[in-house]
Length: 592
Image 1: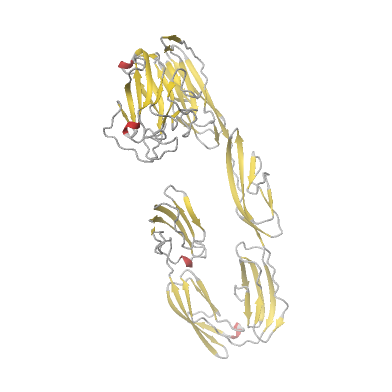
Image 2 (image 1 turned 45 degrees about the horizontal axis):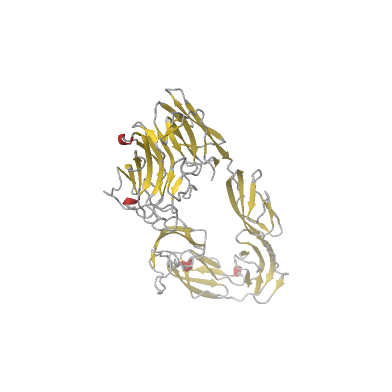
């Protein structure tokens, strides 16, 4: 793990004398500046704080990976930061390798009632299962005591007992008002925090030892906790501290926009001693790239993608590491760029979809004269082609029954490029034909075209029951109901035709519970009438916001198998098919 603190002690006056195994230290100034990160990406914040004082008797931060010179810790104590970062570079952890009683015992000190013992403490969050070194205490007797002894460790007295429910008690055991800590419950002790206690009068002696002790646990791989930055301070002067230009020790949140050195100072206003420490925050410029919008080109062309120059690293989804990527194939391409300092990198990524669209080639043939209807065919060997004939028809092939000049244009219907067109002159002798469907059923969001077009529309008069006089009538997204639409074609003869149109709402209904137990009833998350809305999209999330299912053309067949009972959350985008989309939010409960 990267060291998060840089320590420089400017004035250090230490007199250590050993007598009867007692350690004595003269008052001095000690200042340490810390940061939760020393290398950041531009735009990130950093928490900076200081710790120190004038009159330190002892300061143990465990950064050398040991309990401390002369200190005694239970076998199996962990100094590898197994449960995430601590307040300093390295902390002491009572994990699953540490048996009961879990203790950390200091050497003897000469202390008085104006001395103070401070330390950082965290209990792991209670999970209710073993097999991990990161499982927290939950029962009243599984907390930690701060104790002292003035007779060489023969007897010990509690200064405070940290009970698992977040209550500091005067002694162990103490279960009055205790609330059992459930799985995943946060308490004031499940975050790193600093605690300070004045040395009790009864603990003042020339031979005082301090001990941190956990009395009981549910098992060796349960009920874990840790300590960091244990200090004993016996002030004999007045001190003034400043960190990052602000009075006091912090913590302070700063937002450096460039590499910046922050200083912390502490001064002994009585004796003139002082100490200074600094920490440099390296700010890596944050990349910002844009490959542009999704694009399309005709086959045979070449396209070059570039996120821009000047970044330390490039990695394309194809594996290339150059700044530019030349393409002649369709696909979704992404690039990640990075600016790097030491082992910290600041990334930005972008993705673009590139489609090489086939070229349309239309040939209707030579001008012709026929005695019966003729099929004009512009069909292309590709999907997603939009056709438009001079008659208004949008099919790839049409039947011609009227004399006239006909043209057709075709283009890729998705990208509207790479098109072609052709024109043909056709002469025919028309025979009146009128063929309307007897009945059609459509949804209210759809359109339907009724055609009464004849061999040569210019020779006929068209009268629809709707009032239209065109040969083609488009029923465009009508309201729900039943319509009898008739047409009268007047030429030499009058021909009648009618169509019964049934328009349904096709409304959807979204359930809120499914029971996927394979009994054939309510086994899947079926949305009523979903079959009428192709390309409708659904996303389903669990209670923590993690996406567990996604389908861009949902068919109503998700059964939630493999998931636990409970409530999940969906976002459903109903696609009407002509650019209109409605979005629905809700919950779906799985009961097995």
